[in-house]
Length: 179
Image: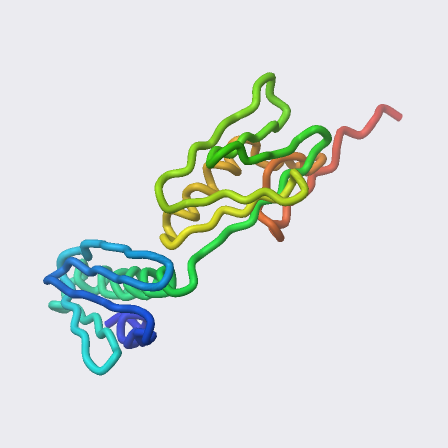
């Protein structure tokens, strides 16, 4: 049994959960998410709680038990409060701006890099160097933030590049000169 999988998921009053076999639909104030859970789990809804249980004690079923519970909990949290990730752009001349819905990043290349958001993701830029990626799907928000970070990952010598807000970059010492 998964320790995480055993925990029941409380459903807030503003959120409606619909179960159809392994298809879970969650509607809330911020939007609607639908996901098909993996085989090997059963999901039940009783008294404002959702309980995910493993079908059997086989390894695959136990592995998917905690995963399924976390996926449903993230869906409920997303439609209720939403998710966001902040990125920080470090370096002289590096900046970002939003044109329409598209994020345009100038990160030291000969051309600006445009990032088109998928449906459900919004970009917001503050001070030309802080990018906020927000949406209701935790997985999608994390993937888009990772794509933006991958444009120019932080380098270890001067720390220039795009990093998550609060991320620590291990710094290396440069070359030591001849003595």
